[in-house]
Length: 449
Ligand SMILES: Cc1cc2nc3c(=O)[nH]c(=O)nc-3n(C[C@H](O)[C@H](O)[C@H](O)COP(=O)(O)OP(=O)(O)OC[C@H]3O[C@@H](n4cnc5c(N)ncnc54)[C@H](O)[C@@H]3O)c2cc1C
Ligand SMILES: NC(=O)c1ccc[n+]([C@@H]2O[C@H](COP(=O)([O-])OP(=O)(O)OC[C@H]3O[C@@H](n4cnc5c(N)ncnc54)[C@H](O)[C@@H]3O)[C@@H](O)[C@H]2O)c1
Image 1 (cartoon, helix red, strand yellow):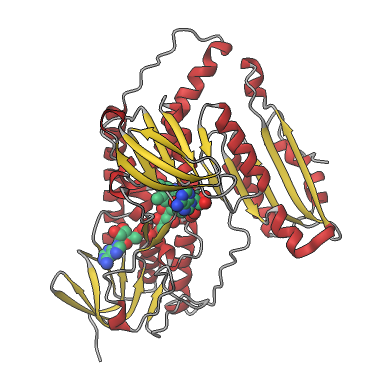
Image 2: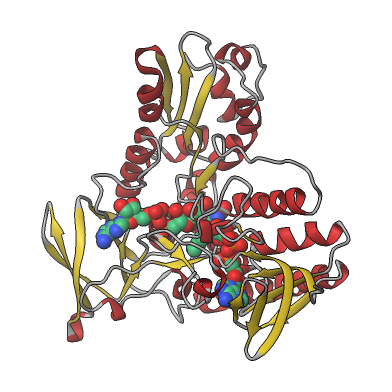
């Protein structure tokens, strides 16, 4: 039987694009379907616009410190509308560069919403395409708790299109998205309140990261209601929106905007998966084996829709790995143990490997912890009470480093570099034997005791 394509990819986010380009490099005929802009969540409503907002917020932090560094009359007006317009222009140019890459790779781009008619036939707005193999890379969308008044809230998607900055922002969910937006919006002068069901923000991170970030954000004026759950949102007339929370301290929070950031669920509804024999789990995540193959032998899935680790570099790596295995005939298993990640709040937090709690669960008493907190040079001049936190989790007998965790300036870049060495199995002694760069925060990782 002949097909229109050897591979049909659904979704042109980081996972789908990486897979399509790699597959095309092996000389196979590839099509990619996309219902929105090229680049997916990451480029259009995630990592990229978020990082621009982080940079914009950094000017506000620098401004606060500038006087201590001899600057006076620093410009203090921030024009959100002008700024966010520039961000969207930049995103458009990135979209176009992806379009050029797809064309150059000889991949057919098909615009529209894809659904399965059967395991080898895809419908896109009435047009039918057949393919020998299909890759699902449809990503995820915000999960919204089913509470009364949820329609008054917004998600991270709308945060990038705010017409103006709210004076009071309430955030439900103190995970990656909640904490990053809390930090950025606080820097712009918004009054920010964060509500989270857990007893500390940033569930899943090492406890020292969680408490350090929460304390620092609290010092900057962000209010936290932890061990608390959103119960109801109402329109309170002149008071604005009213968010009622239950838990440790039941209270009603008045806000102009309520951002809900309580996790992301796979985009697998309305895909016709039932027509193709693809099996999903409780959250709608596509069930795949180690080679990204679904319950249907010619259909594969990668990226956020499989709900393994919802991060761009993971999505890309899974896409490339799929193409290498299926079309390059190269065996390539991904190791998820040393995937570094960062929260781009101020202070920034980053981690790689095991948390102390996970290491103790696995290695018990033999786990050794090396941790230091100190005031970085930058903050000494302004006499700001801002602490950096560096932590190594080490297996006592072999001295192998199991995890590294950091809160402070450039944490993401520092942990990114350490991740290479830690994944290769270095010991604490290897770090001690390395000569540092002075004066930096990173050098402190080489002298922890
Ligand atoms: C606010 C925010 C900030 C983030 N910041 C970071 C960060 O700093 N670092 C990081 O590593 N990760 C970050 N992430 C996560 C990151 O964006 C995702 O992990 C990544 O985009 C996943 O890639 P993907 O290709 O699996 O899915 P997506 O990027 O979501 O792409 C899926 C694509 O499929 C398309 N699609 C869906 N269904 C269909 C259909 N039926 N037909 C046609 N097309 C379809 C969608 O339109 C979309 O373009 C962030 C996420 C958010 C929301
Ligand atoms: N810097 C980055 O790499 C980055 C940035 C943003 C998003 N992401 C990815 O996107 C994913 C989704 O981000 P997210 O922040 O939405 O999810 P998350 O899983 O990181 O955090 C969700 C938070 O919401 C809390 N929560 C859940 N239900 C609640 C409720 N009803 N009321 C109050 N709190 C509640 C949880 O305790 C948790 O702390 C992340 O897990 C991450 O993989 C990554």
